[in-house]
Amino acid sequence: MDCVFCKIVCGELPCRKIYEDEDTLAFLDAAADVDGHTLVIPKKHLKNILDCDRETLEHLMNTVQKVSKFYVESCGYSGVNLLNASGETAGQSVPHFHIHLIPRKADDGIDAWPHFTGSRRPAEEMHALLRLPKGFLFATERLLVRRFTPEDAADLYPILSDPEVMRYIEPPFTFPQTEGFIRTAGLCRPPLIYAVELRESEQLIGQFIFHTVDCPEEYEIGWILSREHWHHGYADELTAALIRYAREQGIHSLLLECDPHQTASSHLAEKYGFRYDGMEDGCAVYRLQLHK
Image (cartoon, rainbow, N blue to C red; front, side, top):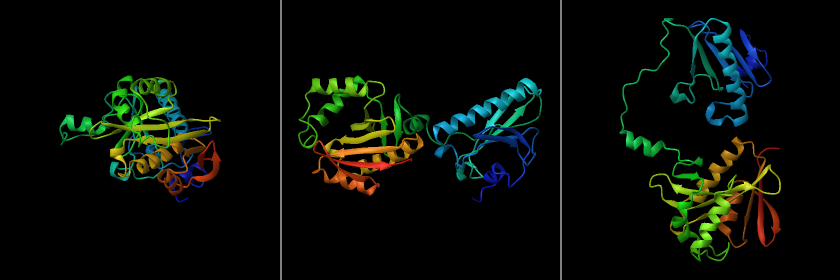
């Protein structure tokens, strides 16, 4: 791979090493633009924080903290700046995830803080666009998946009581059944189902199934969406985002079960590479292997 940091990791290029363990490496920036400017990288090639798995990120930040504390406690510094650019538009120049660590002293003359010119959009507008609600799982461009709250029963009931929506699933729910379903499947830890809402309007439009099955390395997925939101590509959008999320979490495989008459679900499974695994309890079973 033509990556300068990967070449440093494997010893093809030299560096002034500060610290190394099984998963991470810290070394002085070759630019030597300021005293002690250190780069901390994962040894695994990951482009930036956006594709970094949770375990690697934990290892990386542990090393960042370890080096920072060493600089402050043993090298005469009194603070550190941590800088990161993820993506070309953010100024990332080397496509290998890295944290800039700059040790600081009083009156060192370093100005490491960005200078902004002021927000161009109202704070209320930015809050609506960027908010992450409590219980957030993941989001797409149009949708947000989060944990249920007891108050969601009023919005979920019209969906689960619709005979057409529930045609191949279960008999339509009553309102008490909807409340009980949220309580037992949505408010448990970890949840078995999550709420799906439109990001722009915060309208709840359905539920998303996501939980382990027979083994902790396999998760079942599925969705129930209100009839008025069929044929808008939402199930497709959810499936694509969930697969990305599952890979990031290190989940080994995904399971999707559907009635054989649910051709839309079958086609979506096949589109994203799920393998048909036969019939079980009257349902067509599809599996997607993510990690071996």
